[in-house]
Every structure is written in structure tokens, then in C-alpha cells.
Image 1 (tube, rainbow, N blue to C red):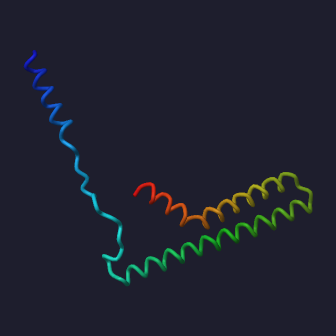
Image 2 (image 1 turned 90 degrees about the vertical axis):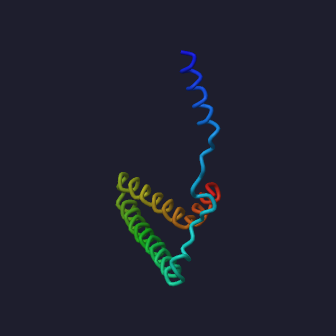
Image 3 (image 1 turned 60 degrees about the vertical axis):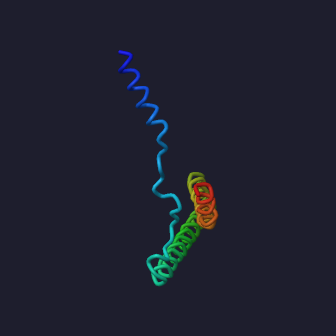
Length: 112
């Protein structure tokens, strides 16, 4: 019995002593490996998608503003509450979309 325990103890000591190696040490994301054309293209595509997101948020906010004004003019309590919520959501979405570079930079600085 003590022989089995000593074998288990020495095996656990070897496992604890062996330090795991990270295969990604020194690896950083770098799109330049795919060439300058790809590096330029993905930035343009990302910028275009970001601009489309701003346009969609603007359309959403304009629609919510029109609904809010209409509900307020007609005196619909539920419509006012609902469109005010939509305006708040649009404002939050605009803030998040505008702050996206800061959010990503903060995440990358914490991780990296």
C-alpha cells in the first residue's frame, strides 16, 4: 500500500514540476503577412461596415423621433413611453458604435 502511495506521490510531483508551455508565446495578430493589398482591403471593409452601422442607427433614431413626436401630439401615453425607450436605445447604440475603437483598445490592452 505504501509503495502505491509513493508511486502516486512521485507521479504527482512530476506533474506539478512540469510547467506547461504556451505555444503562442510571442505571437501577435498581424495582417501584413497576407500582403499590403489585403491589409488595405480589410480596413476599408471594416470602415464601410462601421459607416453602415452609423447610418442604420441614424435611421432608427429618426424613426423613433418621428414616432415620439406623433405619439406626443396625439396624447398616446403608451406610444410616448415606447418611442422614448426606442430613442434611449438608439442613443446607447450610437454611443457604443462611436466608442467601439476605445472598447476594443481597452480589451486588447487588458488581454495583451
